[in-house]
Length: 89
Image (cartoon, rainbow, N blue to C red; front, side, top):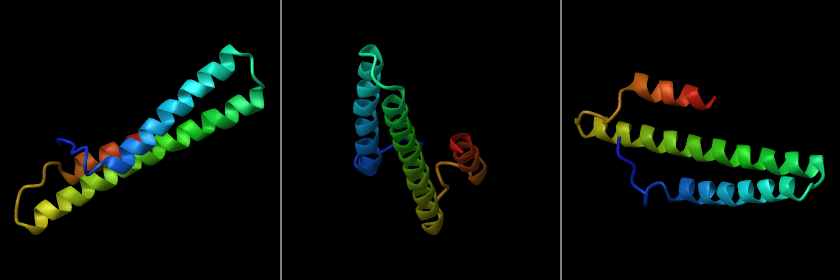
């Protein structure tokens, strides 16, 4: 399934934020920052990535449902979507 950047703008925002956070975590480690602060920021990166992934899956599910409602063949099967969803959990 091709992804439309316009439709996935929220996911892209989350990914860009996670990208910046990850850079900050790397800098913190390079600077010998406090372990608790590093892990707190790393957890925030992880949550941001998870949310972006779930947003992408939700968008794909909506696209497939819309295709079904129009009587078209959805771009992905329910099994494919489930497999991708489970890969994130």
